[in-house]
Length: 287
Image (tube, rainbow, N blue to C red):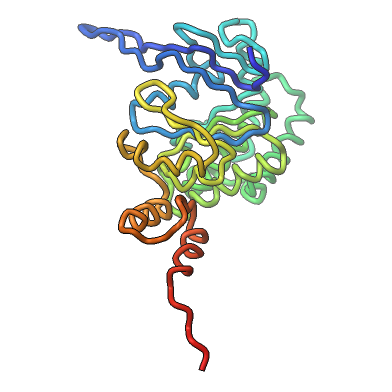
């Protein structure tokens, strides 16, 4: 084992066969380590295995081959499952699938109650979690009256109340409008930077991955490439060869470079793109 907080070692996994079908292997010998406090974006097209891998990190799925460890705890050990799920929270794409109560604060309290946390401590955790995601003023509201972004933030609060070391988010902004996406992303970054919570963000939006410490790209059940956002998104040809996109700013600069313009190899966001393009513009002459 390495010293990573989350560690996948030669992990393989096949979904069970359905009637008249053969089992389908989704992961093929994946090796990946994620350090405590790190923000990792996990990318890949549908069927690449990214969601399957993520579900191994809180023992929702167990490897058919290889090992997965959470802070040294083996996910195959049935006696450790509750502790592993306390340490690694999983936020799903559709918040409605995780909201179980008719009042926001009761929903956030659900996880700690299942862990056997004493009531006074539950009260403190619920209030702290709702404040952390900016939803404390909505604690007595009905979840169904909230916007998509607000529901997702309540779902995240429910995970925070269990005091995890790590949160795995499986495309949490896929069903949200731009405002909702911004709300959720701001919350995730705040938890990572302010509380040191390890974040694994699965996303289809390449622009969301730009703010991560590391980007891991999966294809066909294997890791295609990984590195800092700049290292990964500089490999435009490789990503496109595997039907993957890059951030819009990266795409524009890459296309202009192909046309012969003298531009940096990679621009990750709008600000970098504008700065690069400004250098191409003629400077106004002084009168």
